[in-house]
Image 1 (tube, helix red, strand yellow):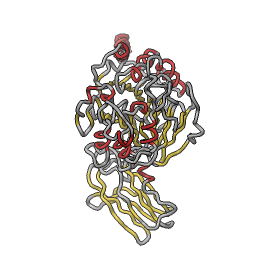
Image 2: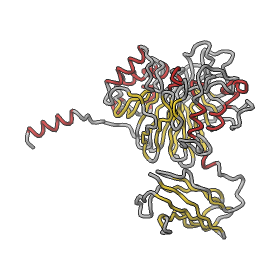
Image 3: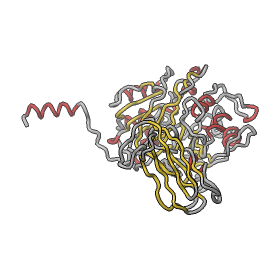
Image 4: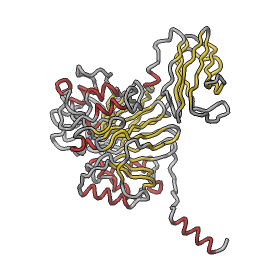
Length: 468
């Protein structure tokens, strides 16, 4: 090769730096709640290895907590991060982000924030650090932004700067930096996790729950829009598996609509040393009255509450009803179960990992909703979920005895597209997944399809809609 061509290639490569990566993703969706005490930091790792750091704790916590944690799981500075998001611009959420960048973690694709005009020296440090990365300056995340994570997993921005996806602006929400928070829905097939910064839920239910706040109610329109009957309709009838509780368990968070509609199996609270002496996070009215469903207006089941650690300094309204477990790690294949474990690394207070029965495996709600106990009495074919679907959908059927069954997909003209099940199957409820491919493993076109189930003296068909 001529020297001139070699020089040209070297110059070209200098404008497109190679990302030397040593990090090996697990192939699962992973969500890591990093214990930054009074603050927030969540690392999302997609099945394809896409990384998103949502918040970085307070000033000093990026250096002392976030960076050591990233390195402890094998995510090193040379790996960098794909995305960084500041849920809002209070120091306990964005204060550590610049320290992560300064520790050598470049950001390759985008850095987002809530678009607020709120300003402090901490905000300026974050903005300056962001501008030094490959991603460039931090930008307001557009409502509805979708970040693919591989294998049908994705992150969707469902609320930002006081505007809710499918609902529109919430009156007066821009008057409070907390209510301008970015909220993201993390989905992987049947698994759903909602993180929404420090959003408020108003105080219309204060007579029942005891909550009191000067923040407006963003939680109600958000939860209503996300549910299957809502305008955005991103959730199934069972709500979310995991909810990251807004505002560190402050009484501004978790109103009755939010709890009753989202009905989480597990709730996480980022809290710990560093709070103001009168904050009392997490609050009794939130943990006990709402999350534990002790208030009469809460119709959802009580949820398992995991805290990074106990709030400190505490007060008369601080709740001690749940488990302090340090860093919290959730992993899921998105189909039938998700797994939660914790490190037990806390800065003060008890370590209650064993009391919380961690590590622990949970059955996904959209699947367990159809479980019959102790057995099933009849053949039945369920409607697939989601429907319409764009990536993968779940079909459930139940049989009362071990039987020879078949489950097949046909197109609108009655031609066989895919055989999902053909053979002897044990009794009980069985989930089956269709990814929009035919028997030749080729993608099929958008449109109406039918799935046909045949069992002993039983047959039924249902319609399914594919919209990529």
